[in-house]
Image (cartoon, rainbow, N blue to C red; front, side, top):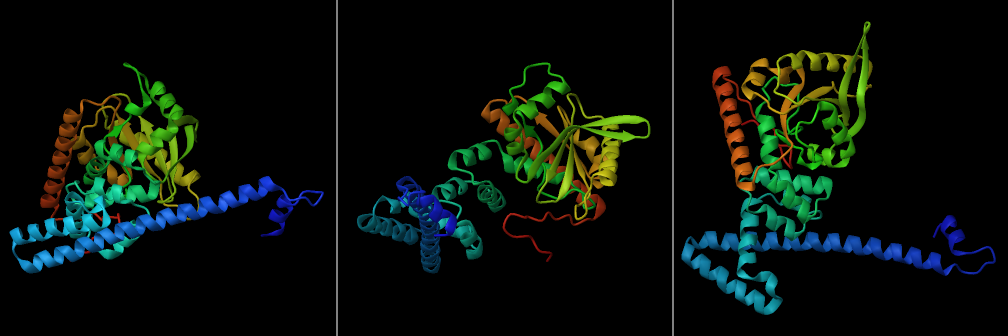
Length: 363
């Protein structure tokens, strides 16, 4: 115990401060309990992965699907008899799938201290390994619990990021995996016929929720950022800083349909910020224009991403679940089709780096 803590424990009359002892011992217990829980979760996840990998290898070696199913069913019953319900057939099958889809032990070892088996169970039904790794990274970075993870999955966070990524060209000045499209601003509880000022006030009133929707790394800097150019004052709606990318992010809020004139306005903001606000060691500022409706084909023709500008829609009210999922799926398919057309026209091999736990490599 250091000198300061000794002084806390010992009162002026040299009597032992019992409350201070209790508080310090409680602190030690809570610290160690937290570490023990993390360690236990990690070992359980690694154990289930190792079981899945071993059983998968036995089944593959047998080359008989029916025989493999019988092996798994028998093994499950034997393990339940000895170790309990954690090894029921459904969970054994999850272990097999976990090991089959997460083949890289290093990735599993990186995830295991942060992801409980309950997290893994939520990730397994997702359709692609990229989606699984996207949410896994989000869990790690933002310490998401099961409820928040389910919310992010149901709100299609991965698909909305993919829509935004698909709008970036090979010559884009905007990094991948930064923005989403659309943004779901139902969290702001805006009434009908709101104005831009109402939208801005709602964002500031619910800033924590807004940044959670934006994603990891964003920090609020300023609202109504005043810029003096010659004898003219211009004002940017919102200014953020991205701690991971080390750059300013200018955000403009528009209540109507996207207009081509917005490009020039944002370019002016970015040039001013680059000249007057950018600090040594920072990357060039980038911009995001949020519109109620975005004509994605027009945006593509304007090549705004080359100028460091992204455009995304925001939705202040969500349709019913089935309609919402169908709408996101349609937007994503259309975005992917436009990306494929760009590749064919330019002869480009645009390849997105998947910065979740590994990066794709050029073949």
